[in-house]
Image (cartoon, rainbow, N blue to C red):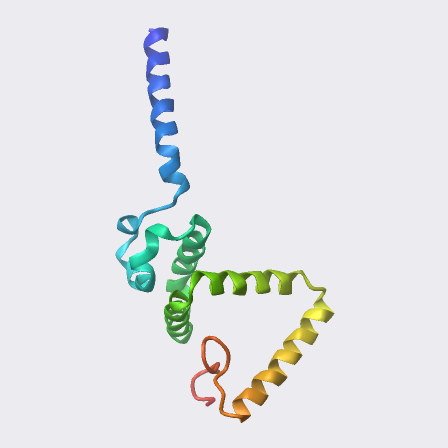
Amino acid sequence: MALLWIRRLAGVLLLALLAAPAWAEGPGWQGLTPAQKSLLAPFASRWEQLPVKERERLLNVAERYPDMRPEQQARIRERLGQWAQLPPEQQERMRENYRRFRELPPEERQKVIERFREQHQQMRGSGVGGGPFGPRRGPPGQD
């Protein structure tokens, strides 16, 4: 009886070890729900090649998406489409810049934000778009 139990346990452990790489990679495109596929459609063609962390970030957004207000949902859909069009190198640069920004002390962060706003206002005044994602839109009705 104990030998049978040990064999079963060994079999289960072996299956778990063989499946571990698949778990580590996160869900494949076919494993996503229809709602996730709809939101993450801009990434469909390269989903399997995305790093696991990137997939996790995107799935996290998809998980929060249903609880967002309609204007937030529209902005998320637009931004995901724009993000998907950026080359991976530019995405990584933007992530690194954001990490460095988050590591700044609060007063330095505020200075950076103020400088960005000033530059953004200057660009808007000159007719130049507002950064990599185009001009930022405020809440509806405040254009």
